[in-house]
Amino acid sequence: MRTRVHGWRWQRNPLRRRSDVMEAWTVLVVSVLLFVVVPLAGMAAGLRAYDQAGSLAATARAERHQVRARVIGEPPGRVSAVEGDRERPYRAQVRWTEPGKGTRTTWTRVPAGTRTGDTVSVWLDARGRDVAAPPGDAAIVQHAVTVGVCAAGCAAAVVLLGLAVERRIALRHRMAEWEREWERTGPKWTQPRA
Image (cartoon, rainbow, N blue to C red; front, side):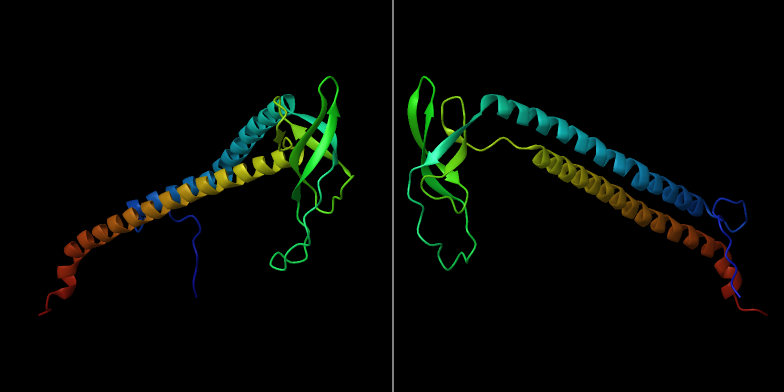
């Protein structure tokens, strides 16, 4: 029959060693770090990434403008067998008219399935070059969540690595403590009895 005594490391008793007390405190500290500090660090990193990505997206929206352009180039031939049957975006020549600047033409990526004569949205920078669309709200949230999860994972890894190092040091001290105890009590057990 076995009896478990809960919290024995915290209670005073003659069998409790200093290493037992240190182990109890370590478990408490690591638990608080893993269940409180690590999630807070992930949330803080995610919120900071959200703010930064939001300000970068707002800057990109301010520097870029969108125009509606008509596709004038011929689409590429059938997708090769290596790429499979999936349709992929491709580059095509588009033309649009800007007030005060006349008709303009450029090459840009258009969605798969676009044909000559279709109208597409094109994002341009201040110089009139074709640029990528600014990130939307979903992309910003996805970036923030990714950064938050990675930060929390890294923080948890640091805590668990610290725990592993502490456990190794504690084991070394416990073994040294047992050796000292055995040096005191060992001769009583190993001496021949007369």
